[in-house]
Length: 380
Image (cartoon, rainbow, N blue to C red; front, top):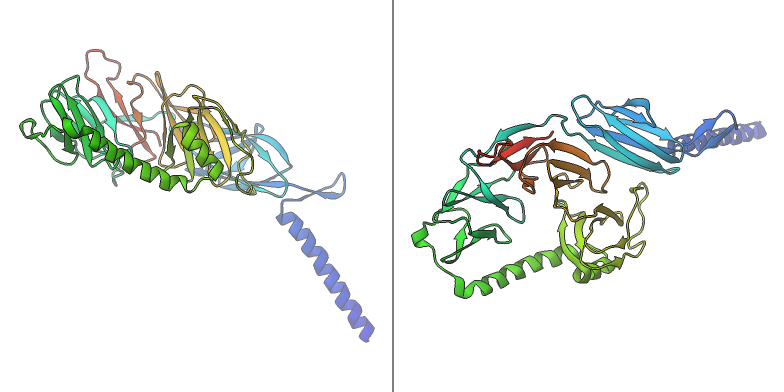
């Protein structure tokens, strides 16, 4: 009787062990192949979209709708995600065995809508470093508009900052966007970006302009140094010596930079993460080209060959590229390039303001006799 109980116990343990093993294989993405009569290793592709309910095509075959999980044998696949009224999301993905690859397709409208933000003209727009404000001239006056994300998705009413501004005047924001430096034929003036200063009350600071600019540069350098602390030391050295400009994504998990000198970015600066991007990297950095470095995944992507203006969208996963006659939005790795606007606008004045669903562009709608204005472009 005792032997029978032991036999039953061992059989039960063996059965549970075998079943548990097969369950673990299935959970890790394995599938049973009836031809070879064995389990084959798979990867799992997790597909989401915003908005959801989109059709998923893999190598041209419909596989379901988002949000969904799909088991795939290791290899490369052409993935398309489609939804009526939106541009098609597409990318070539590499699936690895026993790894989960996650993608989220952000959709943009096929036919974006334009809404005027200014009505009396907007010339020579200049944006602050944090993209919270935009300055422009109208007639002989300098105006500033706050373009922070408001609940209704539109910027606040423009404020007149000063008068007596001529066509040859230049202006730019302080690093914290609270002040604006105005240079005219009569002098250099430091203005509060939140209130009106009449021309006859402006104070000429030409004799101490160098001191002001030094303070601003020091403030900017402190902020950049704090951000660089999150990067591998090898990359910090490259940024300090061989990078012309750099801009962190809004969530500071990635950094976009333009190389001023060539350099080689060493492999494995941080441990590789499972399920990280399989898109082609470019660790051989070339002068004049624009790259994105993913801090979490230690990936370096070439996103622009010719140095065209690029800006981060608030998603931190997309870039906007301002080209002649069109505006392109791409994924942070340089893939999935989509033309979200094709038409007349004044290059390069297309800015990712307000929120991820709208852009701000400068256009006269194709009329040479019409003064250009700022328009909100709804892309989502």
